[in-house]
Each structure stands twice: as structure tokens, then as C-alpha cells.
Length: 248
Image (cartoon, rainbow, N blue to C red):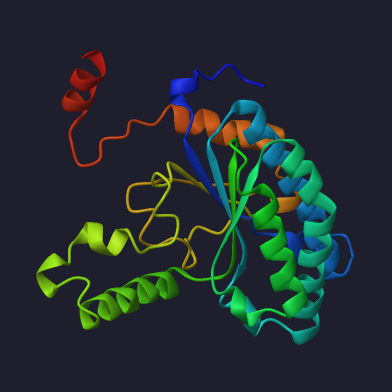
């Protein structure tokens, strides 16, 4: 593990785990084999976050657009979610990981909804890594839901139109209880955010790499962390202001 000062680590990492299907195709395997291999990669990255004491990790597991995939692949993915939760949850709990889910889970089969609820309940009081899984999630859906909640609050008299601000909307967005993501990672060679956390990543550092997700291991993650450690985060300021603030 590279010697990156703790203060230069990201507090919240988000990942689009892309390339499972292409990884399997290159090996003459069915696409689901790539998704299974991707679970192994995810386990390694979660363990790395725990060892590095990174506070939060959020991964894009199933987008609201993934329903467009072939029905057989979607069904196999849902079964894989259930079996993976059942297999991994005890180890996550033993490592003090708190597991959360964002997205519209009501669209999933009851068995998967029950598995999600049980996993969340088991780990809810843990104090280590906050591990969020985005499932049937979309950034536009997220913002739309936040607006809908604001409209309901206005209609019921909880707030007025004059109360609407960035903070009002932001408090109703998914992951509002966490700091904004510091580092966004996308594997698989694509260079787009694909409707993931559109509100939350306004000032996030974006890291794209060619490695397909099943090949993204601890070494690849360390490369991303080193890249992040070398970034100067200005948030609209200039370098001189950032450097001056760092000396004070």
C-alpha cells in the first residue's frame, strides 16, 4: 500500500464499475461471468477502503437505464445481487462496515427488497466505512424526487416558496448526510458520468481509466488515490488562495 498521507486521501469515493460484459466477452464467457468477477473486484476495493480508513464508498451497481438490457441478463443480475448480499453481508458486518442503498428499490422482487432491508438493518449501527450501493438509481430521478418532496412540503405548509435554496434541495438529495464525493472513478475506458450522482459530483475530481472493472484491483485503486493526492482542489478559488489557506 502506497504511502499517501491520510489528509491527502479522499473522504468519499464513488465508482462506476464498467466493463464486466466486455471482460467476459474477451474470454468467450457469458456476460454474467463478468458480473460475478466484478463482485470479486468490489470486495477487494471495499477491503482497501477499510484498511485505508476511507470514510465513504458509493458504487453504481444497477442504473435506472439498465432495465433496457436483455431480460435474461437483468434477471441473472437480480439473482446475483441477492446471492452476493447473502454471501458478503456477514463479512461486511464483522469489518464494521455500514451498508446503505440509494435508488428506487420498490421496482425489485420482494426477495431482493427483503435482502436489502435485512442488510441495512444488520449494519446500521456500525461505525466504519459507509458503503453505499446505487441500485435502480439515476441522477435525474434523484433530483426529480427531491423536487417532488419540496413541492409536497410547500403544499402541506412545512415550508414556503421563499425557503427554497440550494440547501433546501440538497438536503433532499440521496447521500445528503455524507460529504460530497471527493473522487469519482470510472473504469472501462468510457469518459462520461452516465447519470450518476449529477447533483453530488459538482466539484468532484473525475478519474477515468481503461481497466475493465474485473481487472481493477488494489494496484489500480492505488493509482487513482495517488492521482487524487496530486490534485489541487480550488472550488472556484485560485491557487494562491488555496495555498494561503493551507498555510494557516
